[in-house]
Length: 173
Image (cartoon, rainbow, N blue to C red; front, side, top):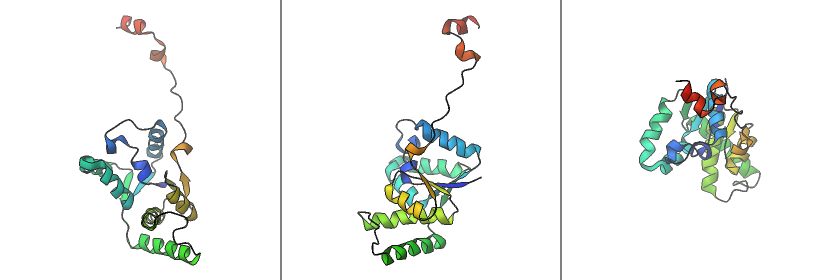
């Protein structure tokens, strides 16, 4: 059993948020694998906030789905995460670049909050398409995975019924 975190860029890929399309097969396989392994998925509240903004009228239903999913835990930006984020801010300021190369200070603060929550909740991995979240996650000792890093699901093993031609299937009934 492991603890992992999803940031906004992974949550937004779920069709329940947008109501459009289907889940990438690699993401669906990841979620199935995490569930099979009884791994917990942390959703930091700053990431959840961003997703709910994009969800529009579907936000309450989406939140309900997340709250009812056993392996998903919404994690707030509490005292421990605030201390962690502040320590990281101080380290960056002491190093002479509080934004650490990121273009926007507000985004840096948000991304550091996401990573701080994941870290204090015990996440060993963070799944993100965001370069800043990835950099901050690695600096905090977490493994970071992008969608392109995920394994594709194994090919479906054909069974007896897959080998039957359509005419064979109708004759069998």
